[in-house]
Image 1 (cartoon, rainbow, N blue to C red):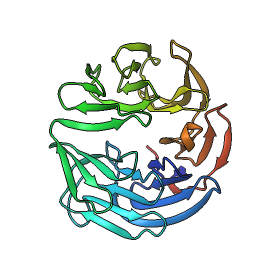
Image 2 (image 1 turned 90 degrees about the horizontal axis):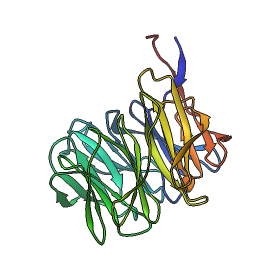
Image 3 (image 1 turned 60 degrees about the vertical axis):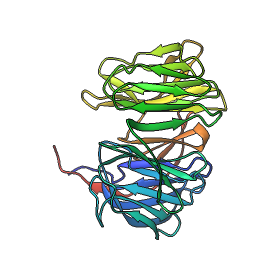
Length: 299
């Protein structure tokens, strides 16, 4: 029986060197990337699904987990990241596919399988706004521009102007902003780099056959976008890539021995489910987190 990482999902704090690591169900660990030490471990409502159900506060203060079902063992719940104590629990929320803190950490956006996207007050969990027909909202940390993923009409870039961006496949994988550009990756499709004001496509990266880019991140240090590319047909290959120049030419930095990855430290590194902390500057391993291991049945 093969042994591999027990970690199935990751979420990094935007302004602190902390990362949340979730097991297949319930258990969450908080780690310090600067020291490679575990800070806490606690039980939660988290359950692995097809969406992003784990999010860490930008300052690392709290961690929010979600589940598909509602009730005492489901819904959406907020925990003190350092202590693991429960802050609040919305047992009424169900079929959550997307949970993410706002850039300032004051609100939490919760997208569900059916129904409006809800905006919760991060401190209390109380619903303060709803958006019908919206699946997810992505904000530009450098401006007031945001990208809205709708249920039926593709995407909208909303800032000074509101520009419709047609979707090219059935599912959005990730979004990353630079000060004046946004990169969008779709399931089984390309990565498109768009001008934030006009929505004009500046470049397009077409992954190899049967591959797509799961994660995207902009790195201010070199003003480049980075991604995690996955060969989904057989699952045999994952790679850290960079998009260089004005044409977005993709270059592989290194192969990844993992099944989940999360960019962190302002884009300077990526953490893998194996526990490797990999530099985006050169693809070298710069640290390791001792994530727990478990046995997996042979398939």
